[in-house]
Length: 334
Ligand code: P6P
Image (cartoon, rainbow, N blue to C red; front, side, top):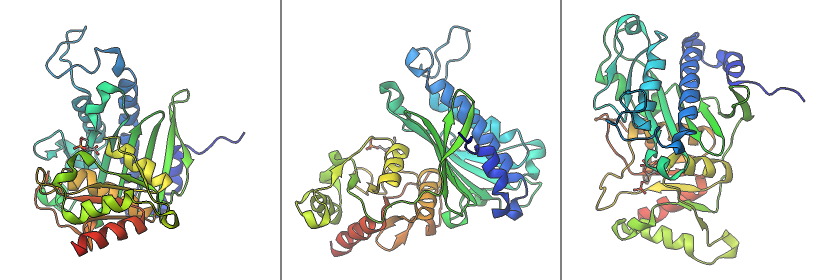
C-alpha cells in the first residue's frame, strides 16, 4: 500500500503556492506541527490526573503544575519563537501581544492563536482544539512588533488552520489555495494527508448552537432555530441538533458533513462570545476556502471586519452556504 504524503512533504511540494513566503511558512508549519505533537501527547495523558491540574499546584518533580491550556500556550509560543521567522504572537492566554526578541525581530510573520480552545472539556474527555492564524507583519522588519501587525482584517491572512485532538488528532489548514486535512499517526509520529482538498456541502442537516441561551437571542435567530425544528421533508427538516461545546469539534464535523455553527449576540454576550482574531477569522478562512461562508451579521463577512482590540468578540455564523443564507434571511426580516 502506497504511503500517504506527510504534512512536511505536502507543504514543501505546495511551497510554490506562496512564492513570496520563501521557506518561512514551511518553517512556521514545522513549528506548529512540532507543538501539536507535544500537546497531543499531554492531552492523551490528561486523564491520568497529574497532567491537568490547575495552575499553581506542584507535580511529582516539584515543577509548577500548569493547566493544559497554559501548557499548550507555552509549547506553541516557544516552538514559534525558535525559528526566527515569526516576530511575535497573540494568544487567548496572553493579555497583550508578545514580541519575540533577538533575531526573531527580522521575522516577517505574526501568528495569532487559541492554543487550546474548549479546554474546559478536557476534564470530561471531550475533544478540544488549537486554532491558528498567520499574517505578514505590516511594521518595519527588524523592529519590535506593533498592534497593527495583529489588528488586520481576516482577508489579509496568509494561512490559517486548526488541530483537533479528538478520537484521532488532525491538522487542517489553508494557505488560500483550498483546505487539506492531515491525520496524526502516533506509531510513526507524522501527520499524513487523509483529507485532500476538503469541500463543505452547499447544504446540511446539522445546526450547532447553545440553545440554553435561546431566550436571550435576537428574534431572527429564534425564528431560524424554530425553522430548523419544523417538519418539512422537501427541505430535510427537522434538522439534527449537534453541539459539543468545542468550536473546533463542531466546525470540523459540519465542514465534513455540512451544517451551521452559530454563536449569536445575546443579552449576556451582546457581541457574541467568540474571539474575532484567533477563533473566528481562521475558521472563516477555512470555511470560505472549503466553499462555505462565515458572517457576523447579514451581509457582513467575518473576514472584512476591521479589528480594533486584540481580544474583541464577534457574533459568529459559519458553515454551508445555503444554511448561512437562510439564517441571514431570518435576521434581515426581524
Ligand atoms: P458555551 C469554548 O469555550 C468556546 O470558546 C468554543 O469552543 C465553544 O463553541 C463555545 O465557547 C462554547 O460556549 O457558552 O456554549 O459553553
